[in-house]
Length: 270
Image (cartoon, rainbow, N blue to C red; front, side, top):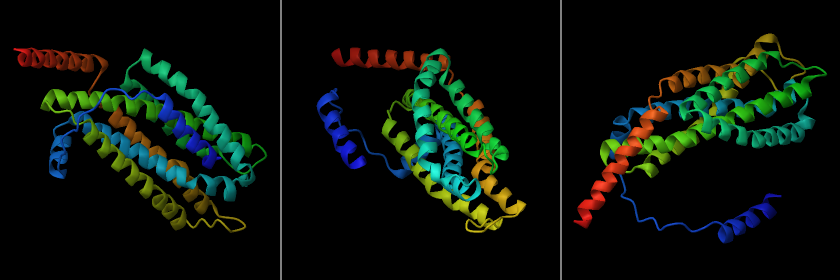
């Protein structure tokens, strides 16, 4: 499917997406300059903290999904049904998240999505091998994908505000630099997540091939799948509550940037 769909998608983009305006080469920054820019940007520090904690939570939980549904719940044969349904639900949920974003602030959307994922993590307590395990787990994963989609919408919207803040404070647009720092953190957490998840399940004594596991082993598996991610998401939500750039503050920054750009244009014309 990918072998067919991917090149077709690329061709569609090449011929249908407009080229846009030419973007001149941007200045390169050293690692020391990047660290200095992050230290001088408190909203970026909070943003990266939220991104690190929530991405680590998703990395840990995501790595354990198949182990949990296959060896514990015993519904591994329904893997495709579970994830196709979950992805379809989360795709449909993108529009309501965008509508909510227009009605409230980006900060509130981030708080709601990360806070909601705390509930998702805790709900794993109720998942057990039973006749109702399949529909329950489909709902569980649909909730996960829906809330993580909302979190991504909020993060991608907020990063632009942080770039504006940095440009207002320093006079330099560091969009590429800030986004790159975030992507490095995302890749790092997705690499760390599986190692942490399997380590926790392992030290609790969970054995995937065992005929049965004791209560401690199952607790370890559930901790790696949901409880630890929920704790990390509590911390991420706490940081999101401390995020300082409200809609009003960002609009004020935009006005100042526009005024600065107008002054610069007049100076060049003069």
